[in-house]
Amino acid sequence: MHSTRSIIAGCAVSLCIWACGGAAQSVGSAVQAGGDEWWRHAVIYEVYPQSFQDSDGNGIGDLKGITSRLDYLHDLGIDAIWITPIYPSLGVDNGYDIAEYTEIDPKYGTLADFDNLVAEARKRNIRVIMDYVINHTSDQHPWFKESRSSRTNPKRDWYVWRDGKGETAADKGGAPNDRSSSLGSKGQPPNNWQSWFGHSAWQWDETTRQYYYHYFYVQQPDLNWRNPEVHTAMMGVLDFWMKRGVAGFRIDAVSRLFEDPQMRDDPYLPGTNAYGDRNVRHKYTDDLPEVHDVLKEVRRTVDKYPGDPVLVTEADEPNAEALTKMYGNGDEVQLPMDFQIADVNALSAAKFRRLFDEIEYNSAHGQPEYFFSNHDQPRQWDRYGDGTHNDQIAKLMAVLELTTRGTPQMYYGEELGMRTTDPARIEDVHDPIGKLGWPKEKGRDGERTPMQWDATANAGFTTGKPWLAVPPSAKTYNADTESKDPNSILNSYKKLLVLRKTNAALRDGRQVDIDGKNHDVYAFLRRAGNNTVLVALNMSGQPRTVNLDWSGHGIHASKLECLYASQDTKLDSIKEIELAPFAAVVAEVK
Image (cartoon, rainbow, N blue to C red):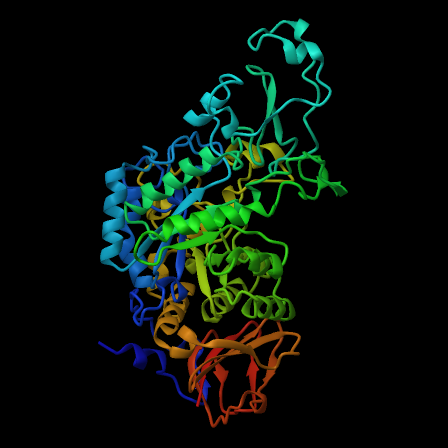
């Protein structure tokens, strides 16, 4: 068996051969030595459980299915899996409407299945991260059922209830269960706050004749985080799962926890959204200062447990300065997801350079966390592809994701070049926002299609009828077929993941730009001690030159040694490199 080093550096110095030769040899995942927190060097892999692997033929992925694919993830080089919600749910928002926080939805299995998944993952040095849906529950959660039962129920204040604007006196004074017209008008919603999924964020409740607040779907009432009892209950949820061996949490919709107590209207913006509403800026329902108090409380709760538990936040902040606040003083979140980088949505060297620099030099000195696809956005194969060179661009994006400094987060099937496959008819839509906004908004089904394991019927995902149709691309873009092709997207990811774990500069090095004014090429150095690696990515459809001026970096370069290249690239000069269209190269500086 070849050593990892010989496989990676097995190409000639003068020519960086496309993909550096044969199929990659995986090194698996290793628990980090030296006392470093494991998440600093980890690669996180998002699993959408409903679409990953079905074990019982009912067309829905489940926990036993995930367990059966742990060897694949280990061989790929994954360190942790983040599993989107697997709690009991009515399925209005595909699991994000939670009816019970401390159980497993029967469609995914049992708590025993979950415990077995954690144990089997641990054997492979893979950690399990849960999704912590902190902002809201399902309207079928026992807490909300109590809350809406009467205005005097002890859990009434666990959610956000308000009188309507312009209600009549009779309305407020009538018997709660009296449906007679003598009760008058319910008035208008308390203010103009909008749901993220369209229309008013206030829903009238006939039983107690008040409105409740929901930032997301009507069936997802917001918890009232100004109530101390909510804090106690939700910290208990964290304790429950930490005791079962999870490695941390991805915190959903964290910036939406608090609303303006004065109930002021959000300012309007020009235009309308996909649902026909006037656009608003969520000034009074997003990023209120109290959010950081809750994040500190969550951090204190998980820090009681061993193993350096990690917190990842869905923090779609408007800029790096706002994102940096999520780190606190090292006492809030370790890994706030960087949506600014995720949403560039164009191959722009200038934009990527600016955004990576901003987070690299963030004032909190926090660890960056990058991703380019997830269950809420079209897949990167489509967003960055030009329709002709998508596979080449997919490999370039893999280099960008896996060689920059930080903790990368992959999305299942990204390593195969899975693409967004939207439903062709409204009758095939599962996602409620697709039903509501069709055809302008087709929903998120397209990025949630079943994992493509092989070229058989239903791509090896299920023996039954899959809950979403398997895309036609599964015949050629699948794990089995690509594993046999040394130049596939899958094997490109494997090679890069091996490099990331074994090269000191890529593992621990700081990141600095080189040829920083190049309009089409994003190039940077990773440096750790005497180890330096050059990464260069041509983000244009034309050949481009990278100019290498080492003088400003204190480097005395004598040659470049190929570590990885997505296309053949000559490395016979230390002053410049010619890159083919959409080419990416990783080279050690000697």
